[in-house]
Length: 284
Ligand SMILES: NC(=O)c1ccc[n+]([C@@H]2O[C@H](COP(=O)([O-])OP(=O)(O)OC[C@H]3O[C@@H](n4cnc5c(N)ncnc54)[C@H](OP(=O)(O)O)[C@@H]3O)[C@@H](O)[C@H]2O)c1
Image 1: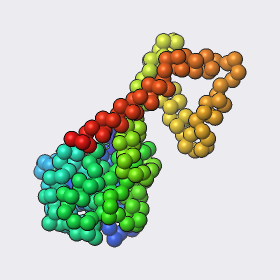
Image 2: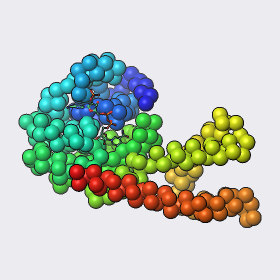
Image 3: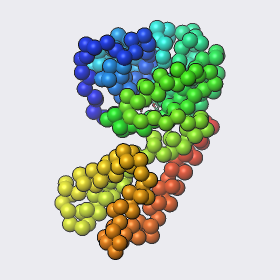
Image 4: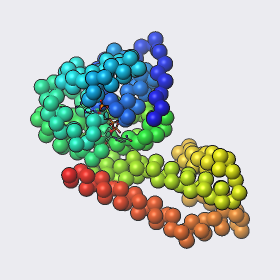
């Protein structure tokens, strides 16, 4: 995935008082970290990131201009806000490892799929604020959709801070923790469904005579603009669909095919299955 260019910025950071640790600055952690810098939420010297491999730490350190190492305890000790970006199976061990650095004044934000706030609280062994987030890959372009939920010890200002973090890479919704599986099945997995829709539309363009190179762009642009219309007008998608559907025109014929092919039910089932799978993964 392409890195986001980080502009050098001489204006003061928006949150100069918060020191941040990103433990596991991989794909998603790296996307967030670079967005924080790009939007000047934090200055580079407020951020301490870690990865698993020392040589990667050196490379990322010079690429991002922030302190990147492999010592999680040191990074967590100096941080007010601790982001967990390792793989889900690594989270409990990582939290136990950084226990000596944790206090009830700190905030943990985990974006590991299917890891419950309760599991993190238990691994931490104290009444610490734990916020769980489920972002998605379009976050790399600032077009992400993240669901957030809070653990038992989170104060409103800590939730506001977490929301601000994820708003640097897109839109957020706050949900009860029981709905995090649904967020996973819908918006975290969702880009994959939509890429298939775009691919299929482009394939259809080829079928009706467009050159392949010409077909993909209008397909992707149509999906992008249709999503933008829903977000920016606030209209129900059905109303927007009706506006495209002229009586006895072309679109209604296309819609009849979609309904007969079961697109609507198939998408609903895809989200249901992915949600179910997220639950299974949480159960271990
Ligand atoms: N990618 C997505 O679309 C997405 C979406 C939502 C949520 N998530 C969640 O984000 C988390 C990370 O996923 P990812 O796709 O970003 O994976 P990733 O690129 O593999 O990132 C994991 C990072 O953890 C580092 N790491 C491994 N062991 C470590 C340790 N002991 N201490 C510190 N860092 C360590 C790795 O370092 P090395 O590179 O040196 O091995 C790597 O940088 C997962 O829990 C996933 O569920 C991802």
